[in-house]
Amino acid sequence: MIIRNASLALPGKNELTPGDLRIRRGKIAEIGVGRTLEAQGDTDIIDAEGLAVLPGAIDAHVHFFDPGYTHKEDFLHASGASASGGVTTVVDMPDTSEPAVIDAQSIQEKLSIVSRKSLIDFGFFGGISGLLCDDQLPRRVAEMAPEVLGIKTYALSGAAHFPRVSNHQYYQVLQETRRHNCIVLVHAEDYDYVSGATPGAQARGDGGMAFYLSRPEAAETLSVLTVTEIAEELGAPMHIVHLGTVRAAEIVATCRFVSGETCPQYLEFDCHDFERIGAPLKITPPVKGPENKAVLLRMLAEGTIDFIASDHAPGTREEKNTGSIWTDYAGIPGGPTLFPYILSEGYLSGSMGLKRFLEVTSGTPARRYRIADRKGSIAVGLDADLVFIDTAGSTVVHGEESFSKGKITPFEGKELRGKVHRTMVRGRTVFHAEEGVTGEPGTGQFLRPDPKLRRAGIKPWRG
Image 1 (tube, one colour):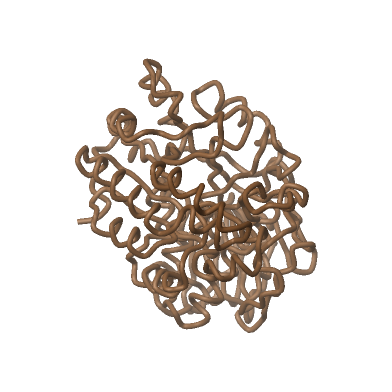
Image 2: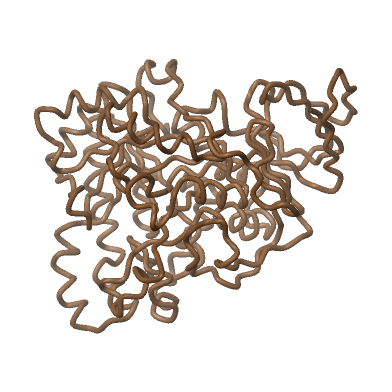
């Protein structure tokens, strides 16, 4: 296959580069910069005239609810929806499926089901809850480390089957994960703060502002301070998910072994929007005060925050409309809007250059989760995961049109600069703007961490 007349987004470049690509056996075999590649038995030629060709986005924080909760979402619909938004690789969370991914057996059980469905490539995060910090912890971590891209934990959890990890338990978990050079992901909200603040916040009413006051900036900052202190003391790799508070992001940026992500919802919305929109914007942690969102975008653009992810986790209409913000389901279908949002509000708006845009959407998550030997950039030898963009086009978000089972989105009606024209995974078109989702279920490949990096000694993420 040859892709001709493209404007290529090449690693390290801050401008699009005219050129061709040759793809063989799903890999990028040759890049012709400023020249036409001669056909060498290539019969499939795609003309990308007028289109920017970028590496497919890596969404390293999704809840696809499969198996076990497929009334909300499943791997077929979620992977197709992600592909429609330019995502070619996802990493699925461990606790929102049945079985939860906690050891070798549960990994294989889940893989046997979702591998038949996925349209795009995928990895798993394993999980450790407070219930699992027992004498079987070393075995579980040892079994999961070669198979998963990280291990997810909750400093505050709303799931009875997957309770929070206490501060002392974080010492136990990180000691084990460090032995295997395995990164620990943390949902960082302070249990004591939220437990104490919730009764008073509930007394204030049933709106978004009241819910926000039960878990405001201080709840996130206190938790981040605690867990990162433990990681730094032990020299253990850690990643803070869905940062929504500037001070928390600043703390992460001072750490040597800790990285962090944010999500489009924290860049676009604040607690006043939550009061206005209600349940469609209910997420945990909730969106914060209005002073955070513009600064978070700047921190992402400057590299203070490492990358962006969606936290895709849709709920049904019934779950999102229980009659009270306190019982309404917390989660949104973020996968289809992740890449289009940051393309529009980051790169095409001029808030970040092309080089940084490529880092936050693909390059940095590929390196952090040890799949950069296959994913993350347009380079010879890597998978031909590509997204073709009409930069002069536009996208209007309509939840009902999404391939996802999740139709309720706080981004409803928002117009974004740029339009995804085509998405390829390893040289196969899985989405086309004129044809919709075109991929074949079960063609997505399961991703394990690069074994060379997993066996290598731990290196600081910064410094």
